[in-house]
Image (cartoon, rainbow, N blue to C red; front, side, top):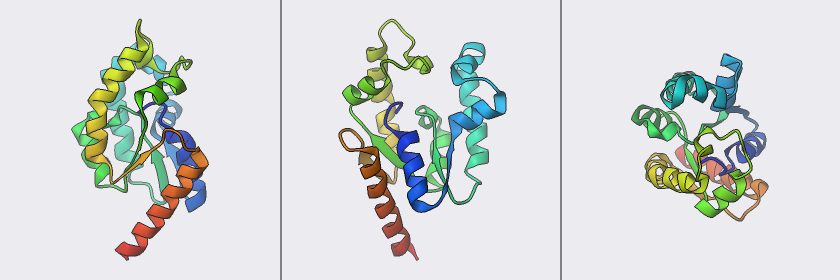
Length: 166
C-alpha cells in the first residue's frame, strides 16, 4: 500500500544485501519524463496500469535487485503472477491509520485526491490487502518499527531462506 515504506525500506534492504534498488514508479517517470499524477491525469488509471505492467515485465528480468512496485500493481492478475514467480515478494503491511498518517499530506498520490481521501484509502486497503496476501512470500507488519529495523529483519529472513534453498 502507499505509505507502507516500500521505497525507504527497499533502499535500506538493497544496501544490506548489496543489491541495486529499483522503483517501478520512478522507472516509469524516467521513461515518460512526467510524474505519475500527470500520467493519471492524461491517461487515467487504466493507461497508467498498462504502463506499469509493461515496466514490470522489463524490470523482473533484472538480476541482483530489490524492486519496489506501486501499491496498485497487485490489481492485475498478470502482475501478481509475474511478481510471485520472479522473486521473493514482501508485503509491508500497515494499518489504515498508519498509512493515513504517512500519506495525508502527500499531493503526489493521485488516488487520494478526492473529497474523502481517508475513505478512499480504506477502500483501497480492503480491495488490495487480500491480493497482497495472495502474492506475498513474506508478510511484515511495518507499522510501529523503524525502517532500518525492518530492513535488517528482512535481510536476515532472505539470507536464511536462500541458505535453506541451496
